[in-house]
Image 1: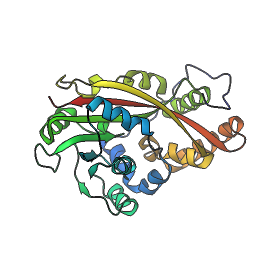
Image 2: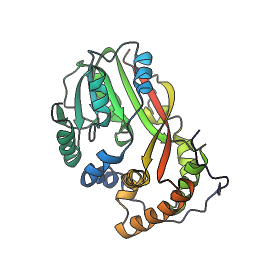
Image 3: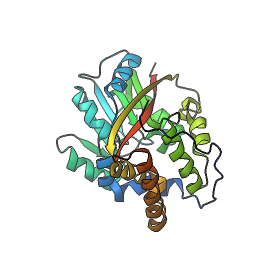
Length: 273
């Protein structure tokens, strides 16, 4: 449990309607904010990769791993450190450039999960860290099965906010009002992403949840919030005003200016059988 929790917050915020940017606009918004993304987004705990190996029934060490939607390389770096022979796939020019700057020794190719630029049956693992939801499963599922070797594993994971932590729930309510959406309902709806991950039902996903936390300066926390696509496509004046107000709320909970973020990493793993 995190420290500095507040004791009360509205559980049913009234949304304020706002225009909804297109899926494509949100997906491409990261390119202009790649440095902000790399510097402030959370990583993933070692226990997550332990769980990937357990569900796959094999070690990542020495395995051929394709990290799709690699972004700035947060997960790619962890996979490489684990001993995997990893190649990254990233569609965005800005994100790929940041990847090169951060991880100059690791290979990256431009492409996306709907049309992987890879030969058939060449990967032991396909990983998607915070990225599968940008694909079209009608295309990305067959592509995953094409590229995976028999017995290979497709591993999808997402850092999700731990809404049972009071201050995180408070923040989610404020974001709900800002965007005119119910963040709690959206997270409940996607809490078990199995059906969304493969609506065709071809894949049999095992599901795991790994909780972890990190302590960061309030500026890092706010920059992390601002690096999400919904904020990146919001007019700058509105975004800046919201984040300034959010800082005020956070400093009441964390007067030392250090925020303890708590995440539940949702992991889905399916084998190519």
